[in-house]
Every structure is written in C-alpha cells, then in structure tokens.
Amino acid sequence: MIPAIDFAAPTRYASLPPRASERFARPRVRPAPRGEQVRTEDGRELVLRMIEPGDVAAMQRCFTRLSPEDIRRRFLHAMSELPTPMAQRLCRIDSKLETAYVLMDESIKPAEMRGVGRIYVDEATDSAEFSVLVEHDWSRRGLGALLMRHLVEDCRRRGLAELWGYVLLENRPMLQLCKELGFAQRMLPDEPGTAQITLKL
Ligand SMILES: CC(C)(COP(=O)(O)OP(=O)(O)OC[C@H]1O[C@@H](n2cnc3c(N)ncnc32)[C@H](O)[C@@H]1OP(=O)(O)O)[C@@H](O)C(=O)NCCC(=O)NCCS
Image: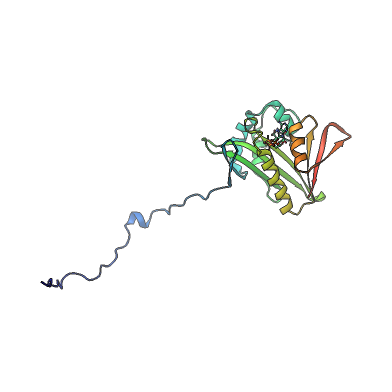
C-alpha cells in the first residue's frame, strides 16, 4: 500500500541561530607551538626556542644549579648570584643586535632552562661575540654543539664576517667543541689564561 502523504509536514527546516553561549563564546585558540623539539640520544626532550622576557625566573633558577666552575667559565669571573636586573637584561634582547636561544625542559612545571646560547653583534667590526652554557646534568649530549650551530647559522643569516668568543684555557670542553666546529684559537697577550676563538663565516 502506498503511504499517505502528510501535506502538513514541513519539507524544509529553517536553521536556528546558535545559542547565546556559543555566539558570544571566545574562540578556542590553541597556542601555536613555540620553538622546535629536541630529543637527546638518551630520550630526554627539550624545546629549543628564542629567549623571552618571561624567562627571568627560569634563568635565575638555572643559575643556582651551576657550579662555581661553570659560572667562571661562562662569565669569565666568579659570581655568587644572578641579580634580577641582570637576568632581566639577559632575557629582554634587542633582536637587531642580539640572538639568544634557550633549551627549555617543559617536562616539568615550571619549565626549567637547561641551556642558553647567545650572540651580541658588533656592527663596527661586522662580527658577533658568543657565549654558551649547558647545565652540567645535561652536558655531553650534543646540546652545546646544537646551540653553537644555531648561533653560527644566525650569524650567517645576518651576513656577519666573524663569530668569536673568549674561552678560558682551562676550559677543555669548550675549546674541544670549538675546534670541532672549525674555530681558530689565538692567545691573548694581555690575558694569559684566556684564548680568543674565532670562526670566519
Ligand atoms: C662547554 C659546554 C657548553 C659544552 O656543552 P655540552 O652540551 O656538554 O657539549 P656537547 O655535548 O655538545 O659536546 C660537543 C663536543 O664538545 C667536546 N666536549 C664537550 N664536553 C667535553 C668534556 N667534558 N671533555 C672533553 N670534551 C668535551 C666533545 O668533543 C664533544 O663531542 P663528543 O661528545 O662527541 O665527544 C658546557 O660544558 C658548559 O656549559 N660549560 C660551562 C660554561 C662554558 O664553559 N661556556 C663556554 C664559554 S662561553
């Protein structure tokens, strides 16, 4: 039997506007991932990204985990603390003349800084001075080399002629790392314990 047609039934349904709670809801914006994921051979994960002004507390916590020897090798003199104005200055960079990469351990909260590599451009000499640091428990995993390679690439992008840094002669790890990256070493007559290492770009 053919079913009877119900002429009263609607053929199209008008779409209703979304509920007020949806119309006025804030769009759900997922934060864009910052930086790139780095995985060490022993399976530890870090994020490599540019330093940010909000990194001050993480940088100061990182400083408290450094040995006096690491501090002397990085800053070329002893320091008992990293004063807040200095940490703020190190985290708020002038991107025209500076680049600073950080390696952040985001597996814990708050995220911890495990390494920093930075350059300061000297426009007068068309060169940049670098510094690099990797927290001791994270060393010998290729992270120092990774930071240095990024700094070299950054200097090339800027079209600089030279990347250089001061390294204490006792700092065998850094001298070895720089040798492997092709830096040349020269003694400083006025600074007997320090070498200047330079990479022509
Ligand atoms: C120097 C420093 C940045 C090296 O960082 P790192 O992450 O351990 O370095 P890497 O793991 O990338 O090592 C790269 C190469 O450097 C050399 N190297 C690093 N540490 C070394 C060590 N303790 N002894 C000998 N060679 C070492 C090796 O050739 C190594 O390659 P390999 O591991 O394949 O043998 C880190 O020890 C550090 O932060 N020291 C204190 C601060 C400092 O000295 N900064 C430099 C002056 S600005």
